[in-house]
Length: 435
Image 1 (cartoon, helix red, strand yellow):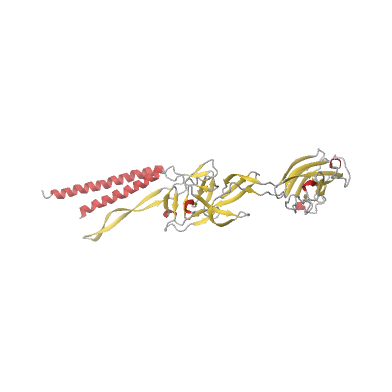
Image 2 (cartoon, rainbow, N blue to C red):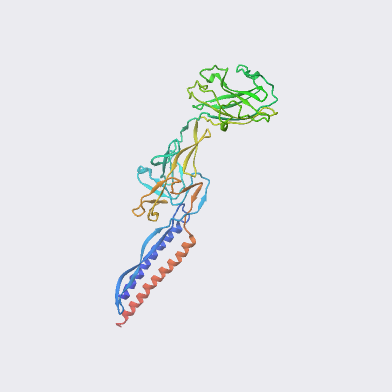
């Protein structure tokens, strides 16, 4: 009984080391698989036989068994790519993917972030699984339950009416004084010293040319007037300029805007910022009627030709979606033809209390198991991990370590085979006793 039992110990060693070699082979085969997590075979000895000796009862091992094949979720290194929808997770999080053919009824989890947008605007992995995330409200906050990341590729973004204009100019101090209150919108060329124009947007995205005329009324004293074509307004007439804003600019002896006497009526912290006349923009195209524009007069008066140094406004027209991208917070960004980006959705991440117990389901995906625990789902910044764009996480297989394991496993297999052959020789000797 004692001799023959060693045969079974040797067989258990062959089985255990054979399974270990399968694990090593799988690791090596996936050394270049994106997001792959290596495994290791954990052995446990078998103690199931007791023998009696002069010193009492002792235990004799009956071989070895495979305890578990353990997943190793160490962080893989990142590979930089040229594709913005290639994503990598740093930390313990997983991307959440779902099969659309099942109505997204069951979620799987992956670290492989080679994603793209399909023809219908869904963000998918190479197997066509939807990437899950959240919709965003107008303030950029997540709302609702998990849903497939999707962008309407035929969508428009609404216009943004102009609310602020920055006007950086120099007014020539040597200009001829025209006189107080001399500006005439019917004869602007002869009743002003200088003018500059800028396109502004209404709430429908239509553009209107707004011109600012500057009239010198005395030393260090100017008046300014905003005008638009009266044909753009319900209260105006086409071809006749309508004044939509006006004010006074005073300068000190050094040519700087005198913020204490420029007639803004605004505290010094924001002095130099003027407002167009309330309800002056009564657009005749149905756009918002109470639009007002703040004009930041970054103005100087030096003995140099009047010139516009810089001017800009914050409005924009409607635009169509031209490109989709992802930022480091997992926000799906729609870039529109009007140059205005917009956050559309946010990618979700999941983490598990015991990720080593997740079930492998193929194609770089895992499924929740009874031992893994339920997932904690969140977004970047909530403790589930960070996202890197233009990057993919490489396999965490260490080839040098795997080959060392291969050598020790091979030796273990060979040693157990020797146990069997040696036991066979011993049994042969027993049989030969009768000869």
